[in-house]
Image 1 (tube, rainbow, N blue to C red):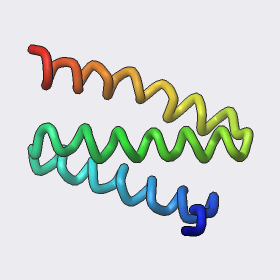
Image 2: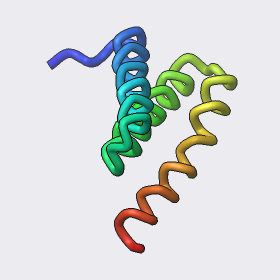
Image 3: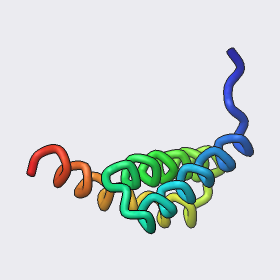
Length: 76
């Protein structure tokens, strides 16, 4: 099995983020936080690999917000 290239990771993460935004607009909770959250993690990985601090800042700060959403869904 070959590993995913950085470009493929970025495209896959973009699709997940946009799908999460679509699900939010269609009010499909909690699928929206799972999709967008996975996309944000993918973009953080891409930022880490590329040493891009702007990507890490943008998507890294989103991850705690998704963790709050997961916490609210599973524990409250």
